[in-house]
Every structure is written in C-alpha cells, then in structure tokens.
Length: 158
Image (cartoon, rainbow, N blue to C red):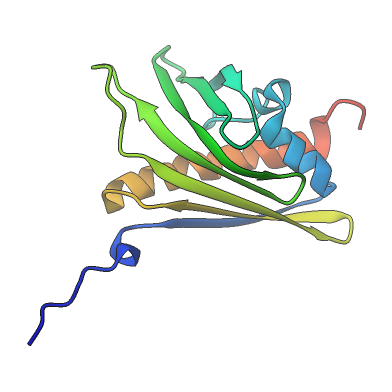
C-alpha cells in the first residue's frame, strides 16, 4: 500500500477575522500608509518604526517593532498581490540577529464592506510549528485591537 503524501495543509495556519466600524478604504490605508501603520502595528506597548513600505506587486516592506524593554524585532517581505481596497498578499519573515531570516510565511488579507463597516479576514500560512503560529496569533490579536482603536477613533480627519 502506498504511503500517503504529506499535505501542506497539515502545517499550522492562522486565521483571524475582525470587523471595524470604519470604511474599507480607511482600513486598507491603515495597512499601506507607513505613517498610519506606525500608529497601530505591533503588540500592546510596542512601537512600530517603518523602514520601507512599497505596497505594489514586487514591492518590499520592512519594519521594526520595538519592545517595551528596547529590543528591536525586524520583519520584512515582499508584496505579491495588491488590489486596493480589497486584498493584500505579502510574505513575512523575521530578520534574525545572526543575519538569517526566519521561515517565511504568506499573509493574505481580504477587506469586505459590510454597510458602513469593514470585515477583515487575515490568513497567515504556513508555520513551522504550532508554537510559532500561537505566538503570531497573540501578537497579531493585540495589533488588531490597536488597529480597531486607530481606524474607529484616531484616523486623521475623522
């Protein structure tokens, strides 16, 4: 009897869905405007500093999340698909202290209008371990709490 071929779907994935009381173009811009992204990206009490954000297919993104203790966590990747204001797809990998990069994942975000609100479907795959996925889930969840406050209360001109 043949041995079953491993399925990529067996690797851990992350799916987070959130709704925001804000227009879709505002939520999309929060992901693609470096000044806006710096207002919400990163877990609670982290500071985000963007180095590069070029949201177009083939464009690069790179940012630093600064922990409350001052530790810097650099992340970077490449945009694969950009369809304003509906969809973003990009790679994501941490830049390690030894000059290498963590295993790369692919993030797909879909933005859907729901009346005056926006539904965001965030998917990240594939992780090398459940622990890595769970760590990302905690960080993203805190970031999305900050994103909600930003797009619903703090967007310039709102």
